[in-house]
Amino acid sequence: MPFISEKDRAMLKDRFKRELKSEVTVRLFTLRTFGLTIPGRECRYCDDTQKLMEELTSLSPKLRLGIKDFYASPDEARAAGVERIPALVFGSDGANVKFYGIPLGREFAVIVEDLFTLSRGVSPLSLPTRKKLKQVTADVRIQVFVTPACVYCPPVARMAHAMAMENPRIRADVVEVEEFPLVAQRYLVQGVPKTVINEKVQFVGAVPEAMFADKVLEALGIKPQEPGQEVLPASPVLGPTTYPTSER
Image (cartoon, rainbow, N blue to C red; front, side, top):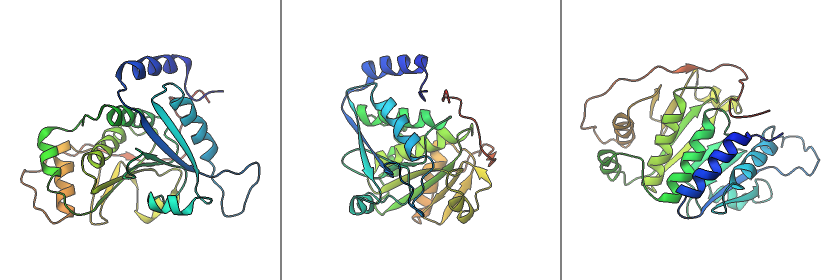
């Protein structure tokens, strides 16, 4: 049974035809088992992630999917900064926009909008935010921890990815923490979205774009020039969830 419903498939195909401008390449770092199970190299969601991305990229000739075996291509994985699998790396010219896990539920929309942004080459960020990000001249790593059912997660994930697309010194990793519990434990993720910037600055909940940009500057020791704004609530991290965009 397909992951993307016929209704969503038709809608996406039509929108891709109308709105995609240039080709977009997505690399999927995964585990190719060929029916074998190797102890220590299990990847529960790798096969499903590949199937989902094959369905999605088949909807437009302007979308390209490259399948990379994480263990068979260690140099490429290292160059892309891939730390775990499944991992989606966006864009053929860089590796600073990533999604770790299978992008189902509300996170599916994040991936779709990333494709549009990369294809059109037009930033969804406001002009003031883009001006702030020009101050970023050192490496920044943004990690956004999410779950598929979280209402507040997609806007934060989208902002992080958009910032990485805006400035090549920014790396944005969105991590689906239900698939990576050890990562959740390491960063003490009790509510989502949780954002960690350069291992120094962190916040939980959805924040306005201007505040997010200020947090990025704060991680570099640059004093924000605007007062803080309201932070929206976070969603608790629960157990396994259902995925509304999946027919499975």
